[in-house]
Length: 78
Image (cartoon, rainbow, N blue to C red):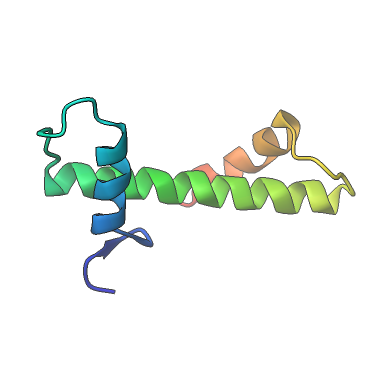
């Protein structure tokens, strides 16, 4: 898993960030890439858990209520 941080490759995170910068010369440090990769991982985990919660409640759509129910679990991961 070399070159990865939190499941997202640094190259992918860097490319995603570059797509949204107004100035093409903007650079991102390695630490910033690792931080953004970790935030993306947390966001994806929260989304997956929210979907599972909605499925457990036999709902077709994920709502804020499901996200609120999984947030305490997410905090315990740290």
